[in-house]
Image 1: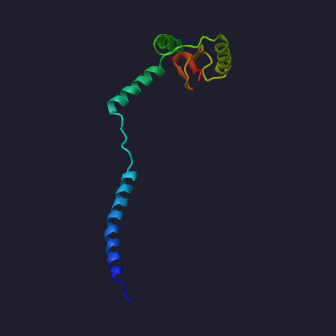
Image 2: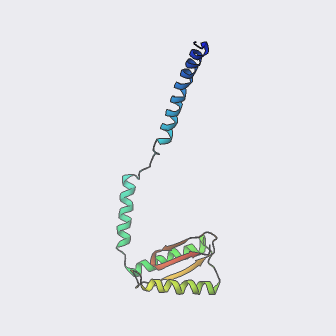
Image 3: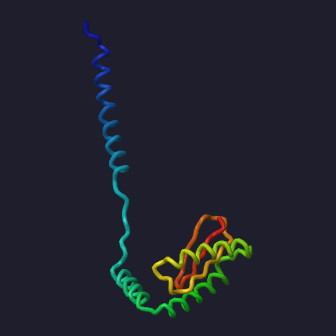
Length: 134
């Protein structure tokens, strides 16, 4: 015997199936669409290239002098140096040993400990290296 509700249920299934497939397809397209990437304008790219070339043509002495200026600005305005002499001495000893076998052992390296709770380290020009207390 034929169930009168079977044809009704098929039509409801068909009625729900197409919107579900459409919804699934739309969600898949949104999720799978690559994010927009922003390129650097050509003029800015050329300007950065020129700056890099200029920086690579300075002498070691000029680099150290520039590094000293950057260090003064950082210490005055942006970072707080750690005053613990034992920690500073320890970091400096390790840093100087590493500097001896670096690609540029001829420049004077200055290792400083920064009072900052984040785990980080960074360096500026002229051999100035900063390590956060973390």
